[in-house]
Image 1 (tube, rainbow, N blue to C red):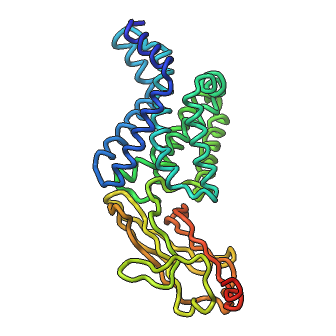
Image 2 (tube, rainbow, N blue to C red; image 1 turned 90 degrees about the vertical axis):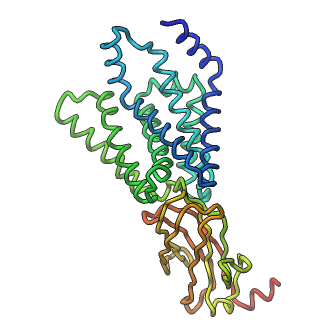
Image 3 (cartoon, one colour; image 1 turned 180 degrees about the horizontal axis):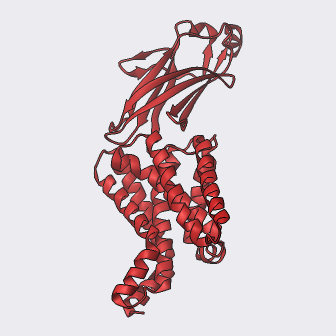
Length: 339
């Protein structure tokens, strides 16, 4: 093994957290750049995806390298390169998901898994002695990381909507996970091939059914309010408790949503009363505004007795939760007692 390669491996072993820190800093930088509408964020995302393409073609590349240069790439270097890409990718996407997660929902599970994967990637005993020998777990982390990286990068690079990005990311993750599964479980019989196809499709179907648990990585709310008025694109006092009599003129659900520059997205304000949907109103938002794109819905038709718990769930076209506004409606007599 060349001397400089050996020294590089030793440095990575000695300072394993530096790579993760670099990934986290690049993630924070990209997050801030997206917020400030600067195109450098796209280049950061492109570099991350190129590193993943290299990782997907790792076996082909090493075979070609050995054939052309008549020597093999050292296995320790390949292992650390794989770990480095996992670290870079996970700590790049985590700032986006931490901000966009609705923590009192199933999205907490997805972001929690990403956080756990990030910790595993920087703790060598866990990564090499616990994760790597269990091939199915290693592939699961691999696919999860790729999926999260695509969800973050695609809207920035290609200006795809959240719905389009989710479908494309899920499809790519399924497509690229199949060769990994085939290498771990060689197809020695047609039945095994069918089984691997079924497993891959089942993983994709599960991802689609649980899409509401996946935060929209590049959409987050910068301002929210439930109010009785909106003037000059500014809501009145945000209310947590509303008198039944105040609802006669209607209520406004106001949201300011941050989105990457160039992104046009359709979202929905879904009004729910005691857990049941009573109205769904579509809104079109446009990315690139530092303060977020301001949009609101005005609901005037309410049940005869609106007293109870209300929610306005802010959703993407595919049902991913951007955020939730909650308020309670009380009758006037109850409100008078508490004042």
